[in-house]
Length: 147
Image (tube, rainbow, N blue to C red):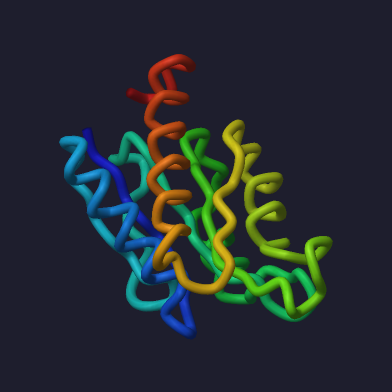
């Protein structure tokens, strides 16, 4: 099994989530590549069984421009996308919290819930990442999504 974790991070929080996902996928037997959005050419995503897209939320619930550019560069909507992100409820409250995760999920028609992390995934939030990823891996099996 092969997966890629594509992420955009300014503060390092989304990158930390991406690294946790990578480490846990590797422990589950996946070969995992990492791609930081905006740095280099977009890889050929058709060679991966699972695609993980991560972003922070910007400007009152918005998706950062770099993630929008990334979507345009891909040129199609893969059907094996799982979305995660970091956010901060102090900027807009629960209503806008990790709004970019919801927008990316909708854009890619992702059939699995998005992972939303408050700032850094350290401490108890690391368990949230683990539980979400376990669900993703089970979801792929039950739905026969490129597994």
